[in-house]
Length: 249
Ligand code: PEP
Image (cartoon, rainbow, N blue to C red; front, side):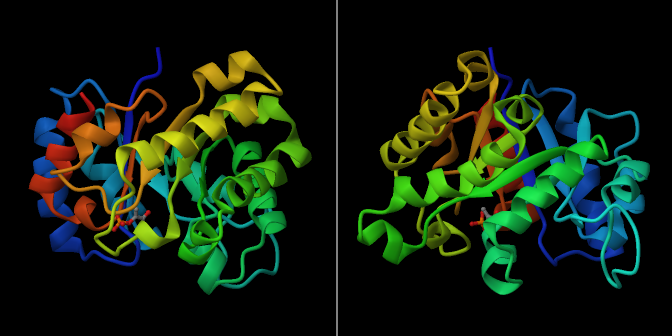
């Protein structure tokens, strides 16, 4: 049985007082939830968030990681640094990193590997653009993004990872994939992994991300291959995030 995971991607949002207010609400309700919760704040707030969630069933995650273990890489943050700060998860291959910061499939796979080497659980984000969907390439694109990791590390690497299907056209747009659109891609992802290792595929959590809201979370999470959500905008509003977490219960 896969335990649902709801992870909040705060992107480049937050401030000390806002984080504190948001987490006070989340922490107060976390123990009543059956799903796992994670929050991924910007790097400078990792220490603050870590102290606010101490002793509570909320996991800490980061939004990116360097593919290098250490060295002269100004501005980068390594996996071992994130692990030292108590991170359990790290996003890799978010579409904003791919589109705005030039992260290729190869770089994403290297980051995935670096995360696991540091003891972190990568949340591998995959998803197609609108034009790719409209030209019928959705499953091809997602399979290619997944293959970059599978070819580099083998299917066993997926046993300590999470995949997030995030159609680019749904991220931050208010347009959500319908439950059946999302389920179709989630099932294809699981089938691709199952072809290499059925046990790994059966245990793999595949999250949906892209304008998940309190109004649509329950139906999305009710699909057989959707194991929770990666939440952007709604993760910054305590009531919305908590309603989404309850929907994953
Ligand atoms: C995201 O950035 O991963 C995301 C899913 O954003 P939003 O929920 O705002 O669409």
